[in-house]
Image (cartoon, rainbow, N blue to C red; front, side, top):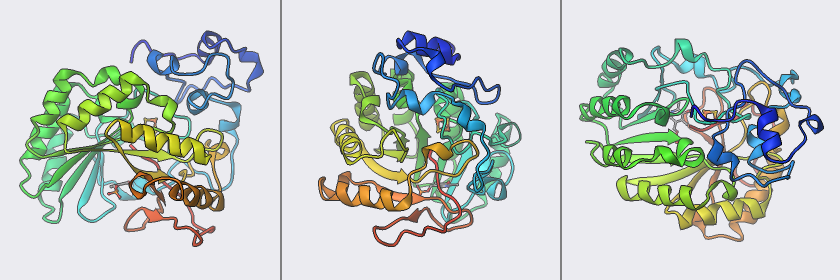
Length: 331
Ligand SMILES: *Cc1c(COP(=O)(O)O)cnc(C)c1O
Ligand code: SF4
């Protein structure tokens, strides 16, 4: 992580691109962060590369667009302190860290006040007290940020603490690190996951087949061998994966690595991300075409997160709700 690119001009010139051709920004908050290995999967000299487009900060991020806000999915209303978010019955999500291996420009938590809402080392105890009192709980999701930004020791602390909750049926890890920094999936981490007292479901986050090179694919297969299940969630992103061919290639590539597509999220309307949005009618058309081309288990469910709703909302073909307030993210 410490070797990651942090300057847009350096990244662009290493890709043979002229920084002056882009309306790039140098934000102080949520600056560019790109692992070297992820940048190596970008096509040299291609200004529209789908990986580059996910991480390059543009001036347009600072435009204010009506309907796009700092807390698009009502996270602040759902958090009970110490990083615990409870929106859905039986599941609880813990923001374990604010750190990520990559900074995705479309991130719905780009403005999340991590400093006040992260489960710190001492916070584990109070989170555990809340979770222990919830008899309906069956699954805890370790999220962030990215839980694989934590050290193996911190992660082990979480898994062991959660192992003490007799009502848990599985623990979920929401992580993009496996895709952007596969080096993090070490033998020690795999051992840690397979030793968990509660079965682990890993939900990775890839948006484009080009993100999954041989190394990433190998690590996904290893995760598959050491965990109960590996699923993928993606965000539908204009100019990056809003074509049937891109979505089909992603599903097929994931399957070849032992990973099934889970959700395709409509963008959460976080401030600064409007230029990535794909309209609902285009999104449902894409899913229809994908379903006509692939086996059903390779078609992700198109959803959006609506603040206050009891679950992620399906956007079914022909019944898209154009007036909905907001959408969803991932990790
Ligand atoms: C998305 C999300 C979950 C998980 O929802 P699933 O539909 O089970 O994947 C749980 N808690 C919160 C707060 C979430 O945002
Ligand atoms: S939380 Fe997920 S989407 Fe947001 S920057 Fe981190 S890895 Fe990217």
